[in-house]
Amino acid sequence: MRRFLRDNSLSIFFGIAFLAALGGQAIAGHIAYNADQADHGEKAISFGRYLTSSSFGQAVMENWQSEFLQFTLFIVATVWLVQRGSPESKRVDQAGTGSEREQRIGPYAGRGTPKWARVGDWRTAIFGNSLLLVMGTIFLLTLFAQSTTGWTDYNQSQVEHHTSTVSYWTYIGTATFWEAALQNWQSEFLAVGSMAVFSIFLRQRGSPESKPVGAGHAETDVEG
Image 1 (cartoon, rainbow, N blue to C red):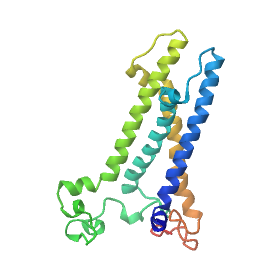
Image 2: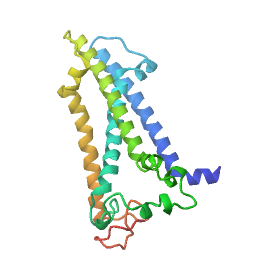
Image 3: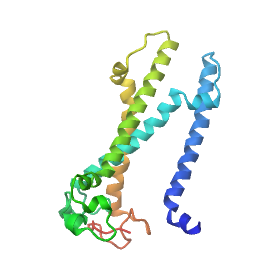
Image 4: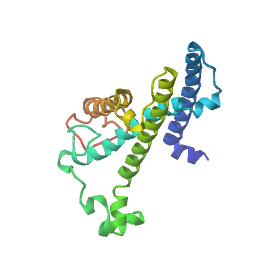
């Protein structure tokens, strides 16, 4: 058990942090929701009812979809685009998908190479893009979830204000939807771009997200 915890400590830490933050968000959101209900002379709802509400669903999905969009774009962009001196980038002369030898696929597969990486057919093509496919799919699913819960929440607000409801496609074209999406996207793009640039000149000893403390600013293909 001790070895398991050590070998998986990073994922365990972030898993616990995620659950704690999600729980905190749910509790705070429930309190805020019922306070708003009281302000408008409406009945409070239970915690369980709040967890299944479109209000909570939209709040969660807004953040999830932007995070998966960030990683999806970063995965694609770093195949072809480079940033000299950043450990978040490949070397300037290594842009592209790489040769079979570099990727250790097909005839260059080693003993520990996954089966789908060594067969050389459509399975290798899928496996070779599996990270992008999964992250991109999760982004699309969470974006859809955000849009549907946002649409429900929007129409509920319309009813409360005695105005007409709108169709799903009409909601997708509203400023309300795009403000919620873009305010998260811009923060994700800023964070990734800042990390790529700051890591050229700044260091964190022992972190794989940083170059060695003594590495030159122009060095790109070194980590840790």
